[in-house]
Image 1 (tube, rainbow, N blue to C red):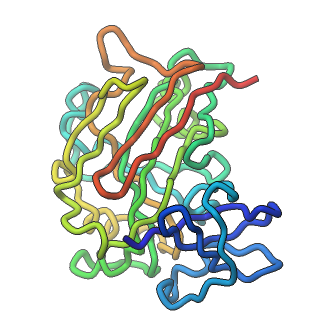
Image 2 (image 1 turned 180 degrees about the vertical axis):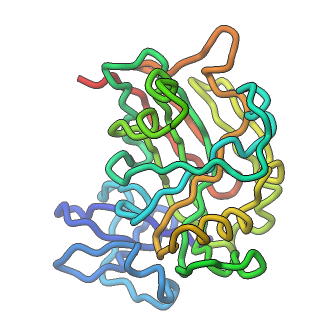
Length: 277
């Protein structure tokens, strides 16, 4: 399976590479910072390793640590639309995250001091490989470099201040992204994969990707109409029903918790939860 990760080398310099079991093949130029985003427009499979490391000797970074854009699709599963009490609209709800909110697999999600309603949202993430503007739906999947996993952890207290989502979606260390980018040819039938979120071992979300209201090709067409997509851009495709904020009683994340998001063969993103100090 072709898996690519971003990481810090043992000397602390950021790079990216191919993950093969417990071995990391460094594909970045030695002696300088190297980023996956910059290589996505080319042929990743053709890159030669400049070094190899044991997986335990590198520190994971978010799959794409420095995307130009993170576009998030809200209300993209009917179960989530229903639990929020909203009406299904004719067009998708799109909001944005900032790159400095991202954390890697294994790093702690931080519940901010201002929140008692810190919620999980497991999602499939799509990473753009070939950029473009006004990409037609029929060709949209040709622009996908691969897939990963996202936890769009939400500060509901601030998300509900008004009708916009931005404040509740952009506190530091609330967007978990990883562990790896898996290429489309290795995923197989994407629609049959399930988004499954567990909190402290309890399954809280579980739904097949085939249940997306707006599929990936449509979302790429739609988003590329109003903004140019670039290599390394990330689209978080939406969360299934079962969010903690809509449970009875509500189920929010707190310090000491652990949240895992799995998406079929793409893998599992795992993060502990800490309180911001």
